[in-house]
Image (cartoon, rainbow, N blue to C red; front, side, top):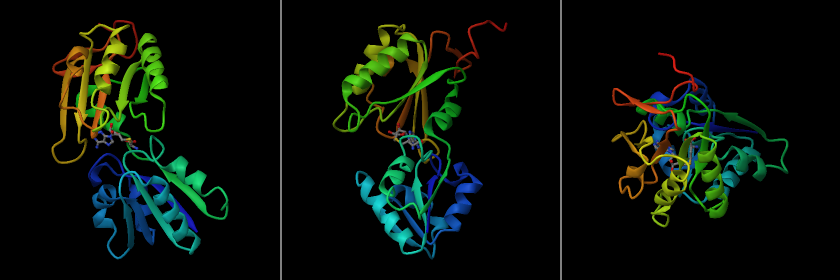
Length: 244
Ligand code: SAH
């Protein structure tokens, strides 16, 4: 009666920790969004696989719980880290009335970290992670977080920057941030981290607004007031004191 909620990292198996791999290997059943189950296919041979479409998150948790209650060991796979806009919390809530089911969270590399590595070293100092998805958070609160994080000079990392319905949210976010940061601020975005067609782009805040290249498989980075470009890489100094 055990559910591993596993962060498999951003892409192919090179990004997966040995702990995540071994948890999948120890499981009888693998549950997850179709794409993520596909990414770990080599490890799922001979196992029962249950996958669902993107939005059926609670259904996926229920499926995992049902299998665990049958006495099986379940691997519930999430992209990146299972606890960052992932399913670890939802799983705990769904299984609340079944304390006999052990839930173990296995961490993974979140897109902020794997994407940062592609661009250079944009995070380094204090940073804020904000999702632009208003499916579960009111847009007014997202605006407030953007505004205050910009004012406090955090490097800002944006998840869920776009979807079919939310095509101009990144423009709105850039505009809000520009109220307390220069339009020339070094920024960047990375698409399909760790997957085929991975693409990292460095640009300015101005170039983020109205950018058509950014999609739902993209993570966006906005530098703070001291972030700079060094040999084509986006780099935030460790603090505000010059080291040279
Ligand atoms: N649990 C995941 C995040 C899920 S939210 C994690 O820790 O990384 C989904 C958002 O994460 C996407 O809209 C995108 O902004 C980001 N993301 C996840 N995987 C990504 C990848 N391989 N490449 C680029 N962005 C990714």
